[in-house]
Image: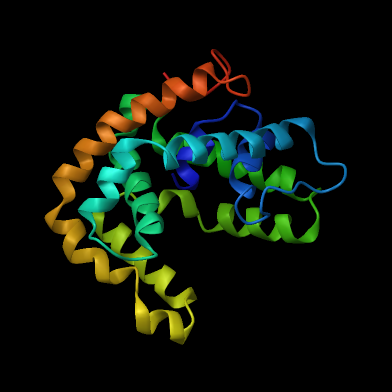
Length: 204
């Protein structure tokens, strides 16, 4: 799952949400003095990734993208954030616009006390409304292009994220069906995990 899903599968504490995001770029290592909520968010991120990586539906979804490719997992993460944006009101108590406004405002305020690297990551994410950039299929295509621009020339010669656009178009409905089965199961996993929450979250 990508960052939008990770923020939703969190408690309402902004540190927890940001830990659930920062676990990737910081490789799961919190800084000295980080809050307990942020550390718990990082650990929840790991639990979500483990649940996702071992789920048979995700294996099936990757197969729909083709037999080979190192970027299939990344592409699928972005697609699922797009599909979450499309079906947001089924799962979240707040509208997507209200949720993102609340999240971005709180993230900018709390990030000023973070060390330089996580502060830059959070500030850029909030200032560009990164989590709101997957709402339409064209938004998804643009996101794949941004992935490509971050690849080295050598990596792009082997594979690009954009090369999956055709198969995403062809397999959109089957992949959407996969998401619609998988995501409620992931929500159940979060709500009943010891680091999750039965009450203190943005889910319905």
